[in-house]
Image 1 (cartoon, one colour):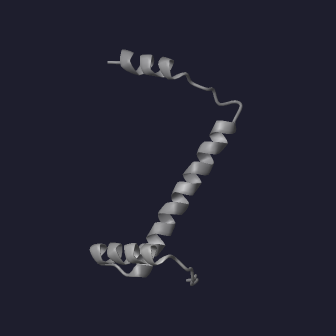
Image 2 (spheres, helix red, strand yellow):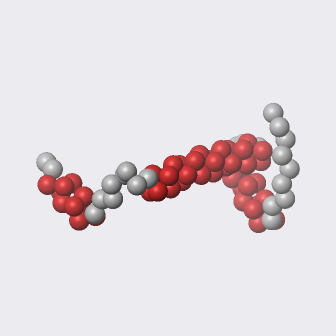
Length: 73
């Protein structure tokens, strides 16, 4: 496993320590999980942007979608 060192503000360090205490985990575990969540969200964002830029993907009008959803039983 690779070790990474980063500087964070005192406020962020305090929040990490509070989360670690609340979750009964180490500071490293909290940081590792936060990074994993962030990277998963970033990947989802990239996919969303790719789909928005896809000219073959139709653009749906909100009123049409709403009407279709509300007309279903």
